[in-house]
Length: 201
Image 1 (cartoon, rainbow, N blue to C red):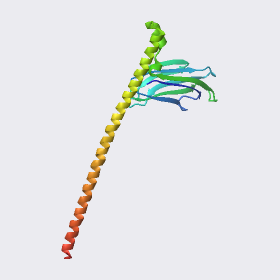
Image 2 (image 1 turned 45 degrees about the vertical axis):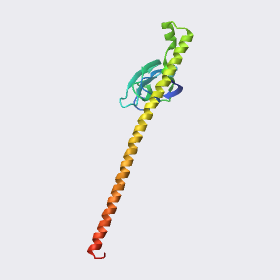
Image 3 (image 1 turned 180 degrees about the vertical axis):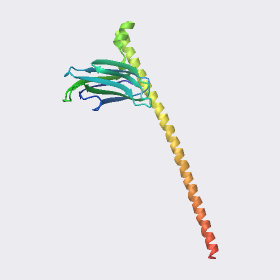
Image 4 (image 1 turned 180 degrees about the horizontal axis):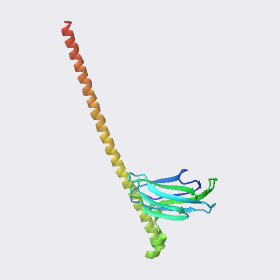
């Protein structure tokens, strides 16, 4: 699965723990290579950008964290089918008062074949441009195949869940019918006994 997300935003500074973080997320399947690039443009002194990367799976996998970010690149492989969340916080230095100062953050997240460093691969293996392009296409094809396989697994899981739910609904329906029949029979017998006691029949 190849995904590229690029964004630029301003983040107002505040004291650590006293203001909200800004978080960006992208859902990615398990086993995907991810590249996160963050660059902070020069700004007013007395502030620093902190960032961390994790996912929202039950294990809360941590992929990286850095304080006083200037220009940083994270590379990692996802450990679960989950949202990969990148959070930023602009923190004022001790003794600085909040005055609206902010930092401009450039953020880019790439995954799958788009996250690979083909220039490095070309230099290390001395590949020709055509060979690099074929390698890139092959990796994109693998990403598509992995995504289709994951979708197939999810479809199978949903189908099993639906079949299980349908079976429960069917059993509940049969149980309800049996209860209604039982109540009806009990009422008929009770009425017959009552009428016999009153000698009405």
